[in-house]
Length: 114
Image 1 (cartoon, rainbow, N blue to C red):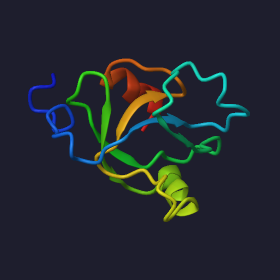
Image 2: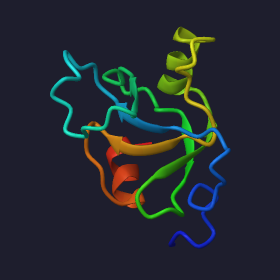
Image 3: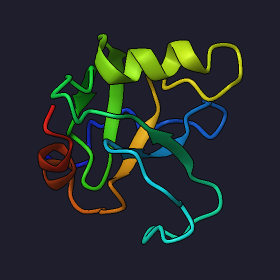
């Protein structure tokens, strides 16, 4: 691992990628969010029924999960719900926190329970 070969870490500034925080349970308020960055794109999905998150990710970066593909599950439902609004999760997006917790790519992956 490491960021030497990570496409997200070496991407040119012109590439359209976004930093996102994934919440896998409904939240009453995002105002208590531990990750306090206004530029974060927030995704809130309900996986209380045990549904898969539905993402393929790359963990070659130290502190992000690079979204490689949306494969169904809760994220596909999110994308359908907000279709054409600009809030869809897309390949190239960076997951920087899960349920408000940051960490290494491996820690983020554990928090996601993909």
